[in-house]
Amino acid sequence: MNPLHPATFAALHAQAFPAEPWDEATFTTLLPQPGMRPFLDERGGFLLMRIVLDEAEIITIGTIAPRQGIASALLAQGIAAARAAGVARLHLEVAEENAAARALYAKFGFTLSGRRRAYYPNGANALILTLDLV
Image 1 (cartoon, helix red, strand yellow):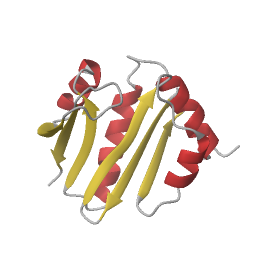
Image 2: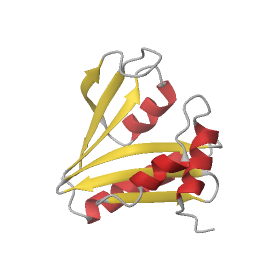
Image 3: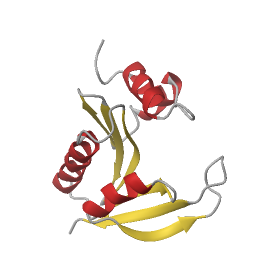
């Protein structure tokens, strides 16, 4: 199977986010969209980013083996790809309570640009983080 196949992303997403997995149909819809950039790490991680003109958004990032440097490697790849595509600003959303992810993003220089109250199904807030690339 092609590693960029929707089933591959769905299987990894289900392992990384068992409480709220995205199914194969979701990735079947997302992957062919214009500007979509998928990244996989063979150790068990994925990143999906959408580039539109000079902005990009990380749609999802996850790993099945935490604390192995997989998310850092994927984020570095995504940032490099965004820069190469002429992206000026990269955005993402993260659960306010997700301290590990927030620390990762801070390490790469992301800063708080907004908050979405009660954004997630469990009522948690989402933080909107931004990284200026130019």
